Length: 365
Image 1 (tube, one colour):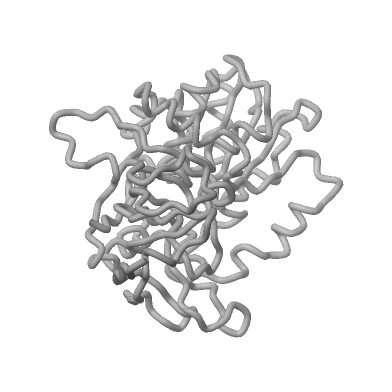
Image 2 (cartoon, rainbow, N blue to C red):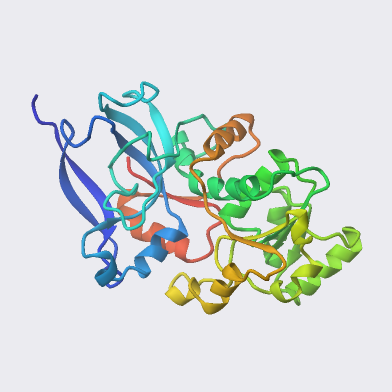
């Protein structure tokens, strides 16, 4: 068999003292994969805060001095398939998914990704996104934009609490984030939750009203706790929430949690995906995640509420749920901006600015 050599370019870093850069390596497409693996030519990859968080926290003494590749979300086309790969996955299939790794030499901000579709789940066949006539983005861009954020939101609603109904009430801290965008759509359109309250800046209230939030509370006009308390007393009949979901890092409600979250015996949950404090993405420290307060909150057996750290679980059906909602038009991945591969630094800067309203996507081709 003759060689089929290509140049595989990837965005990588070595440790927290080295910048991100493009590295190149030769890849022989006839021999680079195992019998249970596929080779995906990546068309688009999305950035997530975990990308530069892990970069800034990467100590070479702990995690080694090898190049580590950015990103987890991807879309592309299968160009090679091993003989033992399930026949669901064929050469020419358009696929997207989330490639889980921490400090992996393989990531998705690369031209070619090699993975085992039976183990590196979730992976799915791309579905077409209903688009308007002037929509500037193709299906590969949309397909790369949703697995991690949608999966995080879906897992939070699906895995902790099973009895959602029209009487359920949820409070979302950080209504403007990409995960919260997915969260409110899933809550209202998939689980039919009756009331979703969001907390955001006063300048984002009009935008977030269109997403499906029933009520919105500003965090920059007085006390967050008091603003939510007033809403609860005035329009929610003083009823408490079945879940408080925090996507930005907040601890304001902990001292008075029993006034806002239903009792533990009611199967209520406080779920965070960002810890107890807002992270400065440009100056990240391990203390932001492993503080004494967060450890005590997680391990304290005497706390009167269920506290969980949310993240996507590949074992649940979130990838199927996402496809279903996209096809129905009840969820459309939000796109903030799209960059070419060589503009990866601008893409990272955009996400780190905290001004992105939707996903930042990098097009590989």
